[in-house]
Image 1: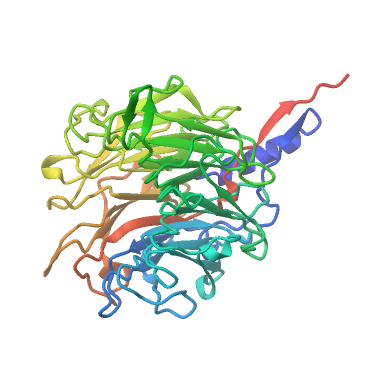
Image 2 (image 1 turned 180 degrees about the horizontal axis):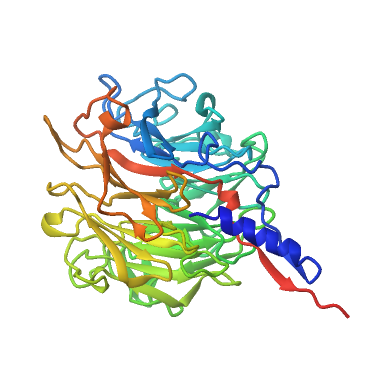
Length: 537
């Protein structure tokens, strides 16, 4: 999401009106961070981090790796790249089978210095217990990400928690400024956590709060648990914390945390609906995430549709300002919804408001609404979601992955421009002719070339390289934004060989592109500012 010019204009305008209006909540922009243009190296170009979770480390299978390609005025500069795994000095742990280093990546400015930092989830790490999990933070500098400035943390850094088998600490990550101090914070999903010692795989979310010296582990943190200050109660295999997104849904200047719980079983009257799914919102404040919360599921409080077995409502989330208001909105994927076919999928959009997200005016989207498309079985429409302003008009646009869509399940990605318009929607079918490559499995947005139009990166982690044939090596596609929207006629491709400028070759089951993030702007810059008139007597 691009907010630089809009935010600066808003601040300037508000300063001019200081005698007639007064702020309720000031933006956190500029409290700590210098006004750097953005990126891991502060050069104003978004940099791309690519999760390669299946990459072997020597003979150690599926240890994982993350590749970074830096942006430039000409787009992604593949000769300017880095790669990180657990053999690199400063990176915690050691490579083990099924570590899946890089299964999840997220970005924020955690120490408020204006350089984007990279958080890497390693949910299969078994240093302390089998699949207990680990998170690695690599800090940005004027030279880019620096493996000499890192933090490697497990559950033991959060109060009296101890790493336990199958916790999967770091299976989901989301960055946002939840306490409005100008430093981004990090929400870490622990979906395998046994809750209260009695609910297996109930799941929790641990939140580490950023500061000018980075994370103050052990002293500035909080936990989000169902039934402890927020709605619902933990149940076996809920996997609470497996999906997350951050946005300012009530416009108070603090980021709020949306948590998808797609494995939640709903009980409505005498009926239990397994894996129907819910989404829970925990609102930010000066003290961080608190007990002010909402819960949403299909059919509840005016939200459209009815919950069904296996819908997995909340499987994907994306926050963005889609209608040009002062509040962030939330897109929610239900890719296993049986709409016009088994697992065809739908997406809901809940609009932000001064009191938070409003379910009674939600927009329901299915693939058939897009001109020239139909909803078909196994499309998985809504598997991945991302928000970005691809045409630079100030409104965020919504990108939707449909990895089973199009002919022969090749996969497709759709972009609905601001205010969610269908008539001018952009669609792109997988450029490869291969089947089941899952084009649209992962999405990332940000301004790679610095032209004030966000760009779109699409992952196809099960792409088969054909020279020679390498199964599920993976590939990433980049399409650049313009004032007219996504320039889909020109698409840039990169596999692991391209992204490392020839240093590495594709290997079977690399899953290059399994996760993606564009390190663009600090999340603390992406907050709303609300002003109300001051009445003078």
